Length: 94
Image (cartoon, rainbow, N blue to C red; front, top):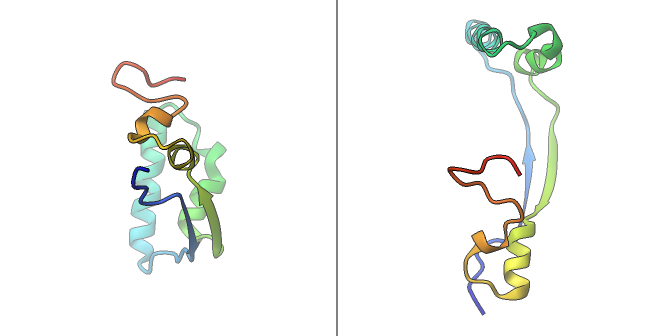
């Protein structure tokens, strides 16, 4: 059976807003500037900007890597052979 390094993972994240208000404003202004360059309406992303301004709530999660699980179950050596919609240089849309 092939060696599998990781099948699942978990984490616990506490997002703390950046200490310096100047740094936060620089970050927000660069995000808004990029939104305008990409043709996006910044007012549609107020929730995202607020996450940058105020931080987020503590949260955690659990993840099961389906490709890794399939690789382990069917004993495939290369994980790339288990990806349902692989991304390549010529194929970026499923």
